[in-house]
Length: 491
Image 1 (tube, helix red, strand yellow):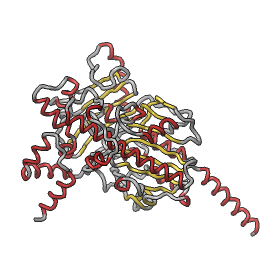
Image 2 (cartoon, one colour):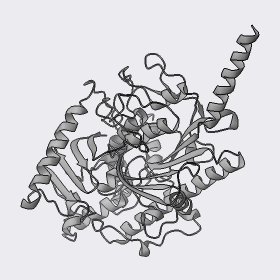
Image 3 (cartoon, helix red, strand yellow):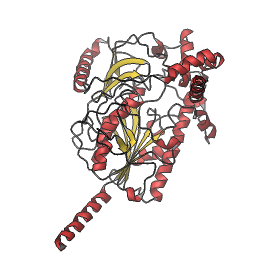
Image 4 (cartoon, one colour):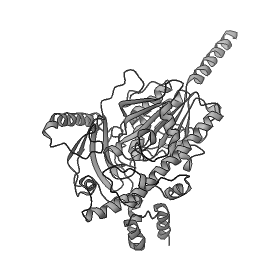
């Protein structure tokens, strides 16, 4: 009996010691951003905390999401498996359909390893609790994938008794929203629109410049939120043994960004801060998929990466990724279908529905993209350059090929270039092979009706003067109008 009690004490001591050695992990996921941060070279933006993270940690320059839209991208990261393979590639579809039982969210594995899993943070905008995945789930609760679908254990707070813990915190401010004006108004040094540096596919217009400046103001806001989280870690004595990871969930919400397979839609910032293990001031050029970040989190936690995951641990000595396979499918009322592979130096896109213009006039985006309204008008007046006009062409190319090492803004389509045919054919084969590998596990398709379609039609009919303001580049406030529209249905 004494021997048995002694053995239990030893086992408990080992377990406690192991738990204390496991690092805490914080995954900061900013919404709708490209690499528009100071440490990545963006002009005028104020991001001192993120810049410090990069200087004292590791900055990855070639990290790509597998889908440029929030819910498919988040679905792939939550499972660590490409969204098409788990049939989660259509935006906000299959929300009541369980994952195939061969797959689990990565938090399931963290819990089994003794981690407390936390969603959100008490100090960030809107608590940072977004999950937004395209399979049946609840934010909190247990998971068995059959009758229980909880992703996390608790909300908002990490305490010493939670260790080791994993916290996923969504940074909302950079997502298009009615708060952008307020954030800018409260900024101590709002970005001067006259000083922003626009990419060549954006028209140089006062409204476009102001919109870009507002976006960079949101970067400053989330940077301050991250600083607050670091301060909390220090105050609670957790800073030394906590890995902090910063990424975007998809590219910036603007022309060629969110929703598109071009670089501003797929390429995201990725910074890993863990001075206890990694020396700082590193820049890595490895090609990284967002699903690799999921696998890396499990690796940090000492958890074996499941065979079903398409991600690989980035810090494993055998890590080697040549390219990322990206897809774009349904987004609200737009039934798009495009596929891409990028190697970091080359990008190949195949548009299976070239008849759908990039400017599909998607209802939700009409409320939140002033640059589109301005440039649409400039296009009608023949005042855009060819690079700017691309987005407004009535059709898309069936294929696109870009040399990113020389053409970072993807302005020159090399599909017809005789000197690039070998590269083109190779990328075609790679894409075809990836499609077969990522064949969906089922063909269930249950999308939801996008309410923005109804709100936009209501605004056109009931508030024509306000609609005209929107066409002139004024953000007229979707959230408020959505509320007014819903009230009108009950009259």
